[in-house]
Image (cartoon, rainbow, N blue to C red; front, side, top):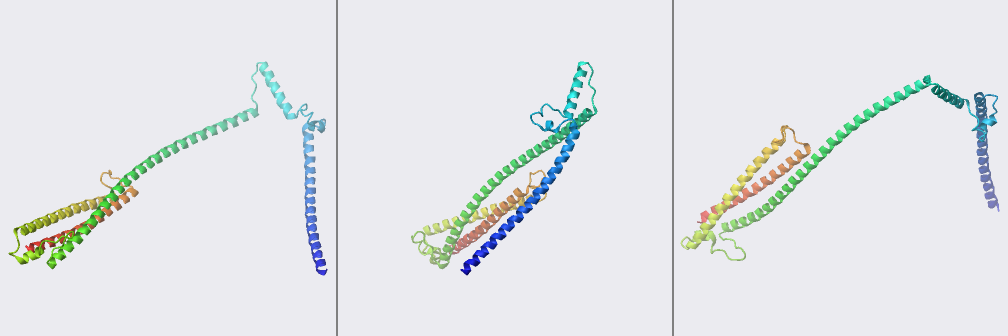
Length: 317
């Protein structure tokens, strides 16, 4: 019971506080409304005095404010305008040109000034529009040039990728050939020729033929000479290929150095090459030079192996 009574007392206190807050808010609102009413009454009195001065004391305000009779009553401004129109009409009917009043002259001056300002603004906007169109055309041409350069660079990149794939494939084949030649050279040094496809080699190999002397037949000698000729041709072909690739590397290096100079690449009429295209071309040329140098190293190694094999055959002969 005590707890219930305490809870009821707390609820009553909370409710009383809420009603007290509401009372305070209502009191403040009433005070604000009273101030607003006082301000409106004061403004109403001022407007009434101004209206009486405007329409005159002999005109009742109820007639002016009555909506039903508002169309019959005209204010002083409306009467002045109507009278001015009548005067103009009478002067025109009498054949007299209406004199221009000060207000009309001032209004005409303002209109002329506004018209002049608008014409100047129109000229300025037209000039800006022409400049913007010219800039747009220049940007369009630059965009088309950039797209053309992009297509050219994409074509060059595709060609370089194809060349790289060919070089990589050739390098793989050269690795296999070098491995086979090394195996054959090792077998020759041990005194036995390597077998191909599971078939036995010529009896004793080249070293055995050289050691047997009188046992070598004319057919063996012919095979030996044929192999020696084939090896010499391979060595000559590889050396020619190395020379060609060294010439290509030299030309690419010269072209890269020429493109890196301030005058630009040859054929550009002394103008420096564009940054994106020049850097992309230099990177592609350097990559091609590195690939050719690696291939030359592999070919040099292959030539040295072929030369050693040739020397081994000649020693065996």
